[in-house]
Length: 315
Image 1 (cartoon, rainbow, N blue to C red):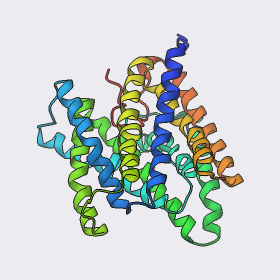
Image 2 (image 1 turned 90 degrees about the vertical axis):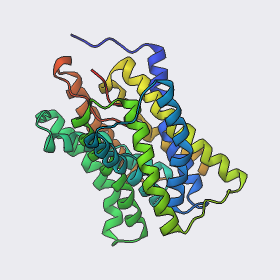
Image 3 (image 1 turned 90 degrees about the horizontal axis):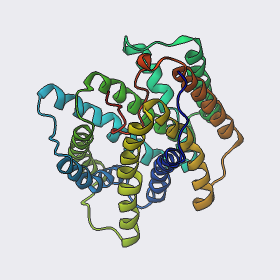
């Protein structure tokens, strides 16, 4: 049966979700020169944590209590928060925000690839196989020229940034084994665990005491924690509920376009031709994977990759 076309409200929600994810990349870039990487990541988590706990109380949820679930959430927090936030902060000290957004657009492809490798429920097929490798080819086109010149500062920054999508994708595959955990409880628990990890690391590595920063920096931090962290998760949660996880993944495919435009409009960034060529390959691969998934009967479709902790589709 053919899928029903998206309504204009759903299209607007899709675009808003994608743009909000892109805003986190832009805002993070604007802060990397003001705060050390671990301090930036820890501050982002601490400012977002009250919103998560507020949602926990609003929806009358509780943090996971079973020891096995708590270990899973703590482990997932390393992949969906700690590593991506720190890797982005370190990488963006050298590379443009638009390029960061392009690198992060491989999350859907990486999640599918890891799911095929580690979950028996995943099936590949020729079209999805081609899509994965087309997208991975895009990553090579982006990072390859930097590596040809040796492991210079730019190449290292790109590889560090790539650690974020890899960790995120691995964590999302792990959490597919714990679908019984409520999405709100999962998100709140992940932020609590991330705070317990990032705050000590910031104190040890950056030597930060979390003194009150200048008002301009504080305002950007608040915007990053709300517009770039809490809002994308909430919008994506609503998007998945309205259109399903498969079509909600389109938000991540559109995100690089918003990131590149925002970097150009607000920071005057200009990317190299290989960055746009790599983006084209990644989007082409994502289209193949998405169309292959949409062609399957709804009962056979797997929950596709998520782009936020709140994006698991509850069946």
